[in-house]
Image (cartoon, rainbow, N blue to C red):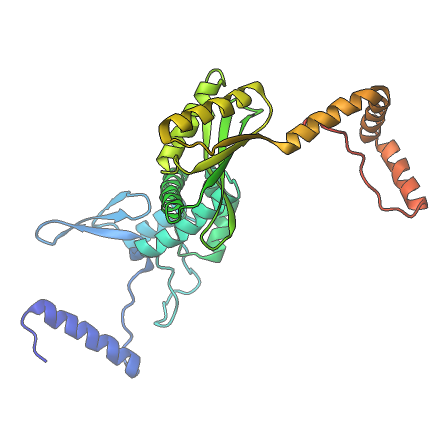
Length: 341
């Protein structure tokens, strides 16, 4: 084996030195590099002369003459959770494990799983900045550097975009017809209204599937034209506007008008004569029950008052539990009825 230049000779010497260290014991102790260099980058000029040392975690720059003690103090003060230093063990053994940060690809893989957990469990982005959460992650994997909440937000947007592309590809991998269900709900905290659009379909393997393809914020009046416009834009975005066979809604006047006008629009644009609008059966049953309860309205009012009184009194609840116990029945908490349920 021959080497043409000093760099190759240097690399070969390093390789042979490392191989000999593992193959046979050495009489001389190799000088171990300080662990702080896992967290600092050496900045050199064009002549390869050291100019400064930059922290990889916060980009703080230190003079080239700064000792490793100064750099370690910075890590211990500013990055206490991320940086782990074994103070009691002054001599680093060759076989000891050092908490070197992950590579970019390894870091990205774990961050993706973290983003999925935050999204699925509806966690706030700021959870990654909570001290207890950082301690937990650090105890599980000291090598992982937790990203800030802005990075998490950017990753959530990226995941959303990628998921949308995957849904588009999946929906266009088969040609079966699609049924829609839509509903409008208003957030009780912000008073912002949203239109949700869900599709139902059967795959080529005869599997029934459903997918929420969009939740759209609505502004102004929730009239038929605005709802139809949002539906058509969403269908066009996923390239399924010519495959819709039905729409199911509740019995509100704007939804009934939406079903009627959407039928006309799909017939005009795609000659879709098979499209039908259906009213939600559960909503119809709810209306029937509400109308029937009016026949016994006085009894229902008394029952509601009783339930409210019992639920608001600990003494009455304890008395009710006692009665259940005497009757050897499992206790059931009285539930107040909800008009829309």
